[in-house]
Image (cartoon, rainbow, N blue to C red; front, side):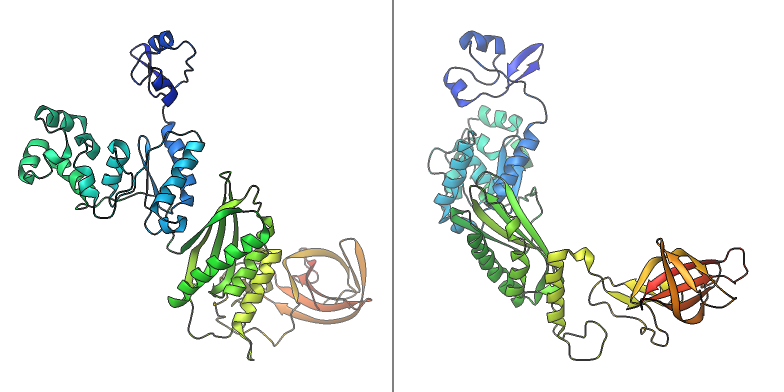
Length: 468
């Protein structure tokens, strides 16, 4: 990789093969071609490193939920509680290194108690990359001062004083180090030794409710996926149950060996930690997962959880001993098949105008502020917006003899009405409505109304609903 510098193309990065043939960073491209005529040179475009590291970091999420970028060429992984899933730190690190090297990356890595120690050993260490707990300070002693991530100016002053290795100044008085080299040296020493705090900024926010399950062999079958899902649900739901919480939204992810991510998502009408119920919701969508060559890691996330109330109250504001949980789980299964947007729960609203007299409930736990009206019959299917019709009326205040709706003529055999409904003057000014319940020759009943008085120029007829 080369970029222009002072009118010349200068090498900014070189592969291991090129380095073995004498090509290294800082050299002029013309000189390099003289050494190696078959050298392939690519433009080093600015800003490439961040998206590349982001992409590799997202791939590393299969190993831990906490991955951060360490510019210009590193990643930091918090592997706490993750290595045992791969059989230990050695196998864990080996798997990461082998996979990334297979993709063509030159990679070094280390596991240590602190970020600073892992950073230092991965770049300057000559022994084991896995530092046993409590041994990170000893691992730092023989490393050069540059292993502490210090500025070039500080490194230059250290070199002039002959302080080449960390062990040559780590035990010096802190006041002397601060006076000669500034606070940064002490901060880096504290971070490396574990006496200072170093905060990571993960590329993705960490969810508090997440469970992971790696596979010893890639999973390619639906039964294998179901087994992994059930195991994750058991762990997650047991944890939620102990905390008195339930899942409202769940995401099941599968990381394929080709780097592709497969995932399915469910939602519940009320918080649930019922393993069988949640499994049945996920199972409806498992067939959409394409395992291809196999899935090597499964993750179950609960981005939305809620408290599970100790006392369950009536769901629909009706009398009887209905099981609220059973109703909610039934709605979840229906939503899983036909979509949650097709299911609505309505509550009465304090308005006379029919289309304003109902509202969609925000949740299953929302209770009505008023009772449903039972003094007047209302259609089962109410149109959101009344539709104009053509009618034939014999006398004022009489119901129509016939009406035409969507090109079909209906002869009215029975009718009841009118029922006058006025607009709320504090919301909108307009004509009143006179409603009629009518029945055609086929026994189908409709809810019609006339807008305004019979002889008004603005008088129009509308259909507003259908009775059962």
